[in-house]
Amino acid sequence: MKKVRHASVIPGFGLSLGYASFYASLIVFIPLAALFAKAFTLTWAEFWSTVLDPQAVASYRLSLGAAFIGALINLVFGFVVAWVLVRYQFFGKRIVDALVDLPFALPTAVAGIALTTLYAPQGWIGQWLTPLGIKVAYAPLGVVVALTFIGLPFVVRTLQPVLEELEKEVEEAAASLGASRWNTFQRILLPALLPALLTGFALAFARAVGEYGSVVFISGNMPFRTEITPLLIVTKLEQYNYAGAAALAVVLLVFSFVLLLLINLLQYWASKRAGA
Amino acid sequence: MSGNVSSLSRRGAVVNEATTEPLWVRWSLIFIALVFLSLFLVIPLVAVFKEAFSRGAGVYWAAITEPDAWHAIKLTLLAAAISVPLNVVFGISAAWAITKFQFRGKQALITLIDLPFAVSPVVAGLIYVLLFGAHGWLGPWLGEHDIRIIFAVPGIVLATVFVTFPFVARELIPLMEEQGKSHEEAALTLGASGWQTFWRVTLPSIKWGLLYGIILCNARAMGEFGAVSVVSGHIRGQTNTLPLHIEILYNEYQFAAAFAAASLLAGLALVTLLVKSLLEWQHTRDRERASTN
Image (cartoon, rainbow over all chains, first blue to last red; front, side):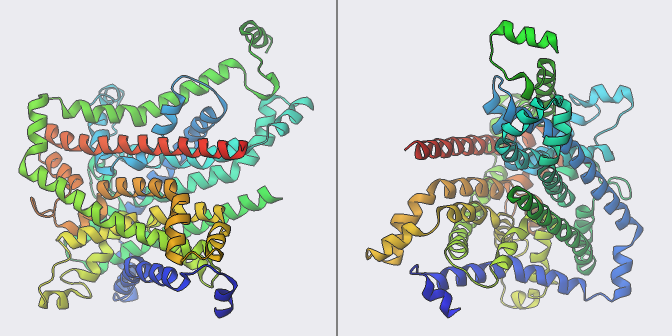
């Protein structure tokens, strides 16, 4: 430690690191540790019966399933949006580009009530879907819509810089060697974009799994059918079942950590490929 | 293919045909992208403002000036006014330590900074309830000393601080990494003190990135719902922030009033996007100017 400090003339190592570590421990580390401590006040049997309760399992299935489908929708359409924004010119492109971040800036409660009003049976969009027998609001499909909205910027924003840095020469070489455009796309572009696509997908997925605000309005919150895991945690908390809420939170956290690890591995893979 | 070539040559555009798509593909992709974004972004945004004014400007004005709404606005501003500066100070000191020095555990600190992004907002509220709630670890002690954190303003501030924790640090770390430390070292060898170096050398060079982080941090602080909902207790006129106020009105079927309050936050979101875009354009222009010099 000492040697390191002498190597630099820049002051403030102790102060900045000390303050940052102190604050991070106080706000993030200690409260999260308290959560795990609370969950493990339960015996193993109690923990597993809380975590594997049929209502909880149904909520995982909905949270993960809807988040997965939402991320998949964003993977496809986010790819198209990023491609169009980087490669083509059209009127209003700058505004469209700025608007992509709306889900980051718009409070989730606002998004929730807006989407619910639109997709309710008499809503602007809902009235066209009801005659077709498609129910969105107060049904699992509504959860998918809300989670698609929440995750929309991730694929676009991870893909954009990678697309911008792709060298046009590689595509030219492929074309001059007689590859069709579709062939070039499949063999050259798609493999180069794959790490960014997967990272964007994983980020959108991770964000959607924990989402609460936008979903509670549109889902209808029926146990076993449209109840997401974060809502079940709130329900347990309102019944003063703190340990039960903590146990479910641990499940959600472990899942997020695994995804976070996966995202880091993907980025490591991407940077290694870019370096090679 | 041949039809496409002739249409391009007619327009006289020099497009490298081999490395772009046929015109119909291009237009179809633009069309798909715009329809997708309209469906998920533009229409919901328009709906907020249309519903807000659905019963006239009078009802709108009454909804945002009634005492409960006004109190919710003030509490939202207060929570942001406390949590944003706290996270700015943290963000700067964490970025300073991480980018100017080598130390063991650096990666652990970076992971800790990212952690709140991976935590569900509901869990972010829950952890403080477990610590400070009536049945939490510190609950009995706080009760004896008559200190209220949960179902009171301090809890709301704590939850807001947690969810906005990474924003400033996340913006500053890559920026300061890229700028290196040679400017600071030059200032210090010329006799400037540490604080002088920070205020006169570092701060001017990171100001746009810092502002960018503050804008995003503020938008999230004012709009947070899940985490604040768990710790607030929903006491009208006392612990309701603007997003919670919207929820209550909506659940009471006062749709016009709910959307009126929501339109304030939607307006904030639009201003945030505008400032953010301006900062990004400023940044690209600075870069281009730097590279031409």
